[in-house]
Image (cartoon, rainbow over the protein chains, first blue to last red):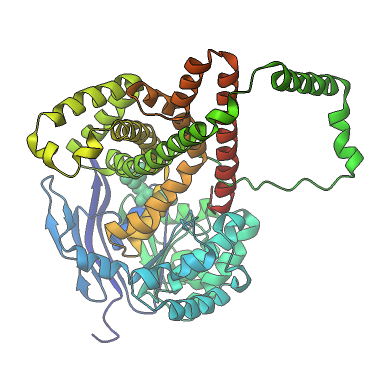
Length: 257
Length: 276
Ligand SMILES: Nc1ncnc2c1ncn2[C@@H]1O[C@H](COP(=O)(O)OP(=O)(O)OP(=O)(O)O)[C@@H](O)[C@H]1O
Ligand SMILES: [Mg+2]
């Protein structure tokens, strides 16, 4: 595999929930170092697309490859797909870090416990090595002093930064963010965006669903506008925000601004 | 199930001067009540007949031990059973789910006394019919009453606690499990590292109450000839023809036990970290 191998490649992805077709053929490529921002109205399928990348939702049709490796899928009786190879699924998932809107930290473990959990349990790292690595990433997100705190003792911004540290600790091929600041009080949004901005400037591969247009414009190398389960327009941020073609996108940007 | 407040830290009261702390106790109605309580206690000690107490003390001690062992062992075994009972009802395949649900419903829906007698007389008689069992090393135990008492109490605790565990498993926020899966945890690991410990933490606050209910259920075993605390006291009443004194002692002991249990479990709960 060389550097040109896409970190994430989605080909003609379809997803339906019962009779509701949420994704209607999405193709998207994120090369290593790309920061892809996904924008779009509520219900346009942004979360669903992101969750298909690590198979938290299983596609109805289409292929997804992580670093050139296709998920092995098999047909289900109701005409959808499901992962056919559990081991492969777990191995690929361990290479994708996801940051959720609602943090989803494990409340019964400390900050340090949350961050070393996957390295120790899933990747089999020796505990002291995992702790050393965890301290590094906690330092990066500004939580070095908080390693013994429990999630419930921290602000939303701190919890989300801890969730980002938890992802960094697995050194993922790509990071997936689903509206990481939407659940935060306005005054806490900045601290989380700053951490993500830092990571973006390090050329980490990210796919970022966000409603923060200014932020998307700043950090993204590529912006994708989703509308009703299709990619209606995509391109570099200057073009998407400066010179949008589609009337829907023009209206969407106006409505946000 | 509503989100249970698992750790509300109990803040130590700010240290007040002794007189300020005593003040509420010195209000007139409190003083009257305290005086009445003291008078009642004095009357109980001086006016009633306690001469039998020293004679029966060893037997009472033994009965207390039997009660405590029955309580402890049935709670431990019942809790161990409750975990799969609860988990299976939330996530198991349909037949197992129905089985667990049926078990909990039947046990919770019928009198414990009835279950005790059914198991003691029914199972006991059944076992006696098999020469293999009569010949086995188990038979000396199976001929006694306590294994049936233990079994019944265990099943009962498992059913009530199983229902609580079902709620606790179902109440663990999906996102926490999803995060574990998203990081590539195999299913069993998700269960072991996240779902299970979270469910147990959620169930802890109700555990104290359940154990006290179980304590109060133990006297039923006296009806199948297990000599627990209650059986000993009944024996005292028959021997001495005293009505109230032995019963008062019984109440005092049960109160002490449930009080101690409450305090110990509350302390335990405070030590378990968790989120909201
Ligand atoms: N598990 C599900 N079952 C049924 N329908 C679902 C499910 N998840 C999502 N949907 C539906 O799919 C559509 C797209 O949802 P999705 O969450 O992907 O939108 P989104 O673009 O992330 O929106 P938002 O900005 O509000 O987060 C919505 O109509 C939603 O109701
Ligand atoms: Mg969404």
